[in-house]
Each structure stands twice: as structure tokens, then as C-alpha cells.
Length: 237
Image 1 (cartoon, helix red, strand yellow):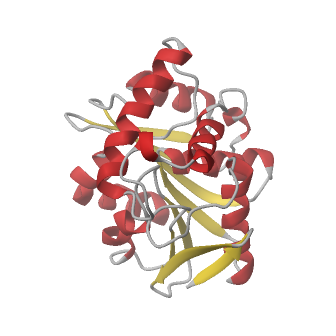
Image 2 (tube, rainbow, N blue to C red):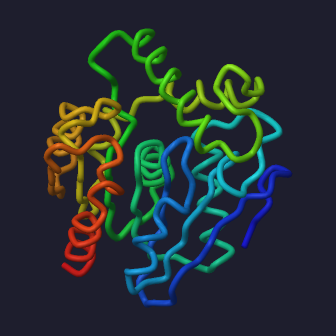
């Protein structure tokens, strides 16, 4: 399935037809398929989105910011006539989720954050951005399915989009999140380290934090069986 947003085709997939609606928001450089193992095992209407330019979605024609990615989700929800839903987000997808909840005031029933990005790093911003760009380069080599093979060869549109995405921090916003929230982080995560997990937990009042020992930024995949179990319990409760 797809929608058209600002002249760009955005792909999404729906798995299952349960009463509960779950929207999956993937990390930068990945796509909706990274959540398929969950969607096939959770009794719900599972909506897996490929954010442009990842997966089967096209590259943006102009630089996007977080409002564009949040609007993409809103357009899909409107097309599918969905008002009540939960969110499962990883990394960059958490930025989109926070934007939807705190800026657009969208009513989310439950929120699951794993390896959530969006908080201000402790180290100097320029150093942090250089490190992130280097790691994004490696991700693009493996997962960027819509064109360029690494960050240095990205179009100016995607470079500006990336800069727009990482320039906004949500430290002062996350305290506005009131829905039940499950936080799952790996203690070996260097992209969104433990101090960020603890900051999420401290500022989101109705939250629960689970730490996966000896797992990194992709703990939700590498410890997928446990993450699926924790997710099911949280959604059921």
C-alpha cells in the first residue's frame, strides 16, 4: 500500500487484522521490514511504514524535517481511518513519535521506545554529529535501498534532511508524554547510551524501563524473542 506525500510515494504494509492498532516507526537507515517478526506474532492491525527514502519509499524531492515525517504518519492513519493506536519506535522513529505526541498532541494509547533517539547528547554537538554521520554512512551502505550507497554520495536533499532531523532535541518535551510508556534499551548501546534511557525514564512519569544486558542499539532485533514477549505483556496490561 502507499500514499503520496509532497509528490513522493510512501510505502506501508499492514499485517494482521486484530482490534488493536499498532504503528511501527523504524530507525534511520532501516525500514518497516525490521519489525515484521513482531507484526507476524502480535494479534493486531500492524502498520509498518517505510519512511522516505528507505525501503520501498521514494526519495524526497525537497528536504524534509520531523514535521514531514510526522505528517506522513498522520496521512496514513487518516487513509486507514484509525483514531486509536499504539506506537512502537526505534531510534529515529522515536523522534517522530515524540513529535506526534508532544507537538501535534495526538492521542496515543501506549508507547514503546527501544533505543530511542531525540535527547541532547552529553558530549559536544559537533563531535556527536560527526560520529553519527560516520555510523549513518555504514548503515546506508547496507540498508539504503533508494539510491546512494553511502553518506558522502547522498543528494543535497537527503543531507539537509538528515541535518534537520538530528538538530532538534526533545528534552523539554518528553515530560508532556502521559501515555503508558515502555522503554527498552541495551546497556551496550553507544548510539543512544544508558544516560539517555535513564533521562527518558525520569522525565516520562508513566514509564517502565527494561535494560537488556550485553545488547547494543539493535537490542530489539538481537534479543527479539525477549523484546516480543515484553511488548506483548505491556500491550496486554
